[in-house]
Amino acid sequence: MFGIEDFFHFIQAFFVVFPVVTILHLIGHLTFAYFFGCKKMNVVLGVGKKLFSVRNIEVRMFYFWHGSCSLGPLKYTNKYSQCLILIGGSLFNLLGILVVNILIHESIIAPSMLTYQFIYFSIYYVFFALLPMDFPDGTASDGKMIYSTWKEKECKQTSQDCQSFTN
Image (cartoon, rainbow, N blue to C red; front, top):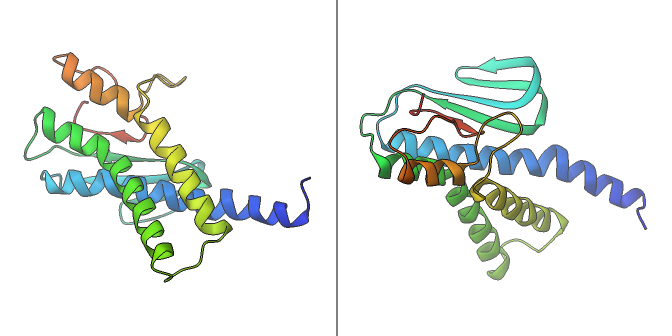
């Protein structure tokens, strides 16, 4: 049965935990892009009307729903660098899961609904990021972009959350 306590867990999950998982995913893309010499990076958190922006980070009205990054040219660009940038978001999500589990195992933090939600949404994010599929808006998942990078000479799509060097 869905009670009042569950409603608070729902609010926590979708308005706090899920955006944190999204930000972690985007940081993964940005970290690998920086490693390969990208100097121009922009981040959009959410969809809808722009609420505010700070430097190269834009926060939109529905901040909890989706996120994306745009990358400028890379200093080192090849199939390996492109694939590492695309998989970087999922690697950071997996790293987040590992860190939380280690902290729980070492009794530094206690297992809780918050840690459960973080791990659950991180797995969810990794699964749908790496599943090679097209989204309704015409963009591709990171997995589809990785596949396209290795199969095609030039990829004509962009990833849903990491528009970059392919344009």
